[in-house]
Amino acid sequence: MAAGHAAPDVPRQAPTPSGSSGGEPRRFTTYYVNFEEPFRRTPVGVDTNDHTLDMVVAPDLTWTWKDRDEFEALGVSGHFSIEFSETVEAASREVLELIESGAAPFDGSWVGWAPPSDWTVPVLHPRWQEEPPTPWNRREWAYPLPYR
Image (cartoon, rainbow, N blue to C red):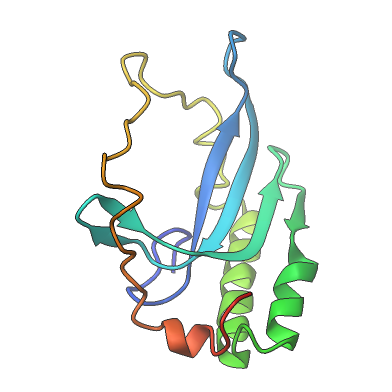
């Protein structure tokens, strides 16, 4: 399964290129891999939920975990189910295989990407704070305890 293209209702990983901005010429700095719920359409946009675990991958494909200790603590405490934690771990192994093999999106094809110059900053829907979230249909499987 390719990164960022997980089957519906399966936790997904979303590698995205990051770069510098603020008046300097854009320069590719990192891939950021965010493990998260599948996106769900809502009347005002999309909903998802972060799974805490992330990876930061440099252009030379060296990588580090971000928030691994917090992710593991959520599993140990029962806030994440054992099966859910194992599913996210399996997704992270898939990403590691992509990194180690230099497969897309870690093949360098994103290094020169920049947004079109006519792109503007999106505007939030006026009801974005009032619209109730659209829960993931596997929420109870993943999160047996309420997060406090």
